Length: 281
Ligand SMILES: Nc1ncnc2c1ncn2[C@@H]1O[C@H](COP(=O)(O)OP(=O)(O)OP(=O)(O)O)[C@@H](O)[C@H]1O
Ligand SMILES: [Mg+2]
Image (cartoon, rainbow, N blue to C red; front, side, top):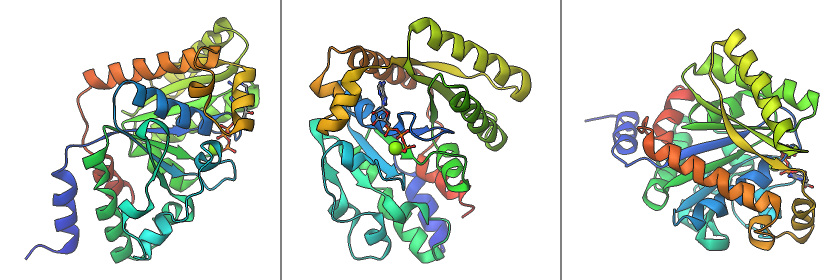
């Protein structure tokens, strides 16, 4: 009789995998959560099913930006108080949010049974999503790097600030050590112009090639835009409130480019299968 781990691996590998994009940064406050929420809606606008996994422990979370108040999170699933479908919250345009909170970051610390159970529950995402977007906490902690390394794409966000750029490089470096073949894309947020964004990308791409032997791609850029600030205050995503703002238009383009590229890229297996791997199951 196959053991539980074997059964889980078979279950997870049998699913048609949703593509996973993890949004990460070195420095905090560079705009990750805004990117996740608005990118999710931009992808939904293209007729795709999308699930956000909130793997951030910080305060300014996905639920805050969407003005939703989830009662339960993955912790409750892990404790077997709730099934996954009971904690999923629906957002604008039918996007689905899995409140991760403290549950998901402890994935490495839980008992084998709890971890197997939660991954089995998470595998049902594959039935409801074309894309999974993961919002992570800032910094290169073990857990964040695990999530990022398990994704199809690492979307690294930075602002033009030298400290943010340096920390973004540190993030790319740990990703490259973990997974040299990772598809890493840089998104420059709060740029003052296209030229500034492209200059920063070009410099970063050169350094990554020279010192890490890694080719990173340009995901695009968002201008420093008051619509973003206003939308955060109103707790309504800028892509819905201000679709014709510079940030709104740029986000739509970023979403189209990402989806287009992913369509052409062969699937490298499922996120959950790789999660089983990175957490050394
Ligand atoms: N393009 C932009 N133009 C102007 N302001 C922006 C832009 N993007 C983000 N901001 C501002 O930066 C703030 C922080 O954004 P956000 O919460 O998305 O960052 P974060 O990287 O998720 O932060 P944390 O690391 O704390 O999770 C927003 O509340 C907003 O005021
Ligand atoms: Mg955040």
